[in-house]
Amino acid sequence: MKYKEYGKGNQKAIVLLHGGGLSWWSYREAAQILQDDYHVILPILDGHAGSDRSFTTIEDNAAEIIDFIRSDLGGSVYLLGGLSLGAQVALEMLSQQGDICEYAIIESATVIPSRVTHALIRPSIACSYGLIKQKWFARLQFRSLKIKNELYDDYYRDTCSITKEDMIAFLRANTSYTLKESLNNTNADVRIYYGEKEIRGIKQSAQRIKEMIPTASVSELSGMVHGEFSINHAADYVKTIRAV
Image 1 (cartoon, one colour):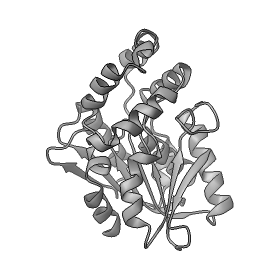
Image 2 (cartoon, one colour):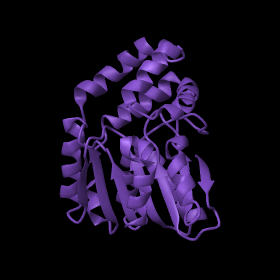
Image 3 (cartoon, one colour):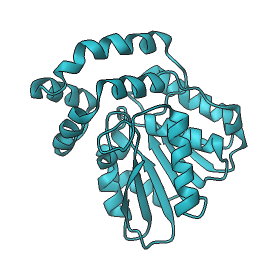
Image 4 (cartoon, one colour):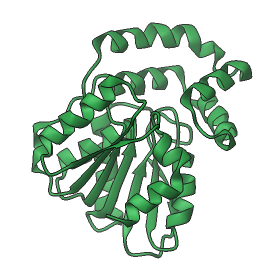
């Protein structure tokens, strides 16, 4: 796994995990704000543009990052954050090593599998993958994600670099992930966030995580859609980190 790092000389380390189909740049603005006070590490999840291996499982990604934290960061970090697929990896890390971080920010995670969506991913990607490099199609997809316009070039470049098999693999993993019982052993202070305009499955997942970690807090973000908090409102996201 490859990593982008900001503020490397700082003592407190923060690891932020991007969503599926995105990459480290979705946290770039937040990292630039945080770098004066924190060592910010942005992993590039397997199977994404700039990564050094194909995507296998959420569990494998979690184990890779834990190994990096053990070898390079003293075995634990101050804060772990993740969005969507990255939030699932973060939850899995908490399951594999309960003391991997002091604080965790889980944004827009889904932990309730969808059999129908899971089954449709391979045929739908097989039909649409050839359109990904078409700019008109990419622009439509980008607009549907409600990501700020200045990230379009990063999105288009990197989406074009993801192989069809990797895209199928991480999307199928995203729609089938379930929580491990070991998650309730974590001693991290967990903060769960989701947008008011997210689908019901994300909101239900937030409550499922809360049931597994009773000490966790759950916050609904007024007016926001999936992923909008950390990507489009980096300054507010950073305020949340600084306030833990």
